Figure 1: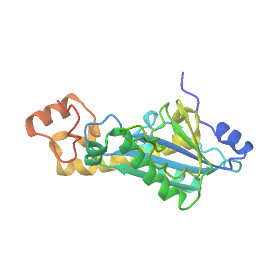
Figure 2: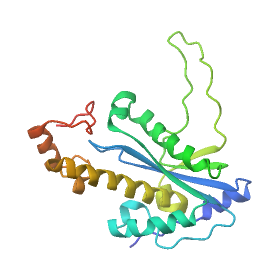
Figure 3: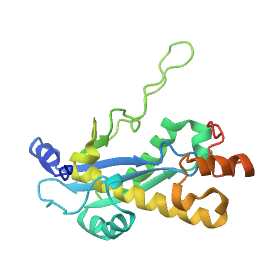
Figure 4: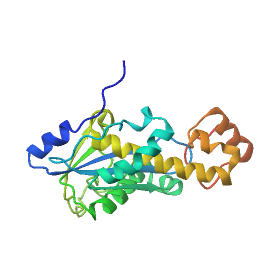
Length: 222
């Protein structure tokens, strides 16, 4: 049985609660051995936005279908963007901080056009908000400026919330294009097919050729 298509139901509920402008946010590339982590953001005016047929979680769509949806999503959204954090940034910062960096870049670009009141973040982990920090002696450091929006995580939001599903499509298409381009420079790793994930062929190529500057060298690559 096919999964139900995502809707704007929750976005509209949020609009009724006073959150007129809602951003859906999703990431791709978290588990890859090479390439960036990428975060898509799609902002909608929740009370007036209409459904966008054909959009689903990017993992459920064929590549050609995802690519064909991008212009429609960009026209439909009040604002949209994709942010990236490169492999060397993942190595330097750690995965969660790199996700936050990519998401911050995407939100900065999109919110320069339309500022959201509420952000829906796919999953059960808030990797986007700045963590509360303390020093080694337990003293609190100055708090970062609060975000201008409310944020809530939602498990399987990419399956149920249309703004998040649309964000997943934009992020997947843009990241896949990056990996396909890098595959021309490093054909041995098969990035145009595996998109940097840890397939047997990819790991065998790392063993034979060594990692590139686009691999996450702090990860267990072999």
